[in-house]
Length: 230
Image: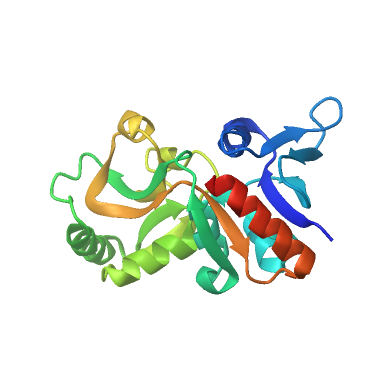
């Protein structure tokens, strides 16, 4: 048996993950022609590289089909209920940083905090007869965050792309989305609430609690961690 390490299969996250491991003595590379979804590991024995989309990695960790996985911490928290029972966070990798934030129209000059949003949502429902809509694809994280802070009288509407445009397009009154610089929010005349950061995400190495951890997998894991920790 081998220890299966899942990493993002393309793009900047894959390149940065390869760089992070390589800088610590573990070489990750694509094998085969034309960037096939197959990879190789050098510098440590008993580890198999599995290339997956970042969104698939939480599911594969939960199912125990991979032992380790690199993905955004937002992905794990959003896609896995009671995520701490299913995976363990081993290391934050220092790249892929982005904040999941609550943003409202910049024209809402009296709405700067979550308390303001709660009051605005109640007033919106009285005026319009339905709840204020918040567009997002992060339903679990946003719902838990707003419940924790006592915000009511809202409804989450699903948005899988171009979430910042939903307010302009009149399909939502506010949004909850990932941002790195805030430029797209500002371009769409949105502002982040002062206390509206739901989660600060970055690429993170996780360990599956549900995978089979036999002698071979445990030995490979120990060898990998010793190499990474230098």
